[in-house]
Image 1 (tube, rainbow, N blue to C red):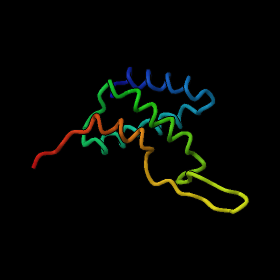
Image 2 (image 1 turned 90 degrees about the vertical axis):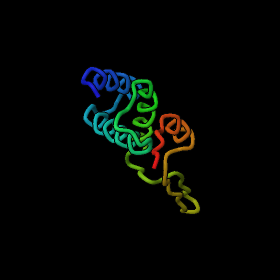
Image 3 (image 1 turned 60 degrees about the vertical axis):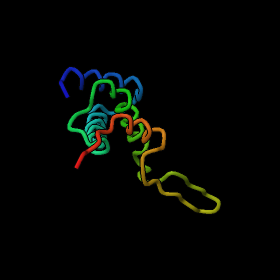
Image 4 (image 1 turned 45 degrees about the vertical axis):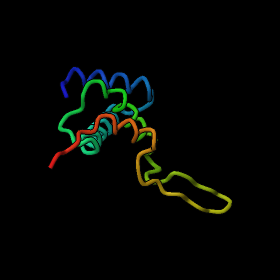
Length: 102
């Protein structure tokens, strides 16, 4: 990813998540980029996927402090663990997936 593209994404994310620490945004953006490439069997993230990359990063940011937790009940003291990306993000990822031929 070019420095200009990275700067543009960080700027847009800072507007989407106004109180976020810039360093955290950068780390989460890098993690989201790696997840994208892994899930899609790609060595790059196309520019047209920048919106999805932002969604993935915002999702990761919102999970900070509650990693792995998708639901919590205080009266019954039960917790539900999150094991994967939400379905909407997974469907979006599949559009960019490269098929490996054997």
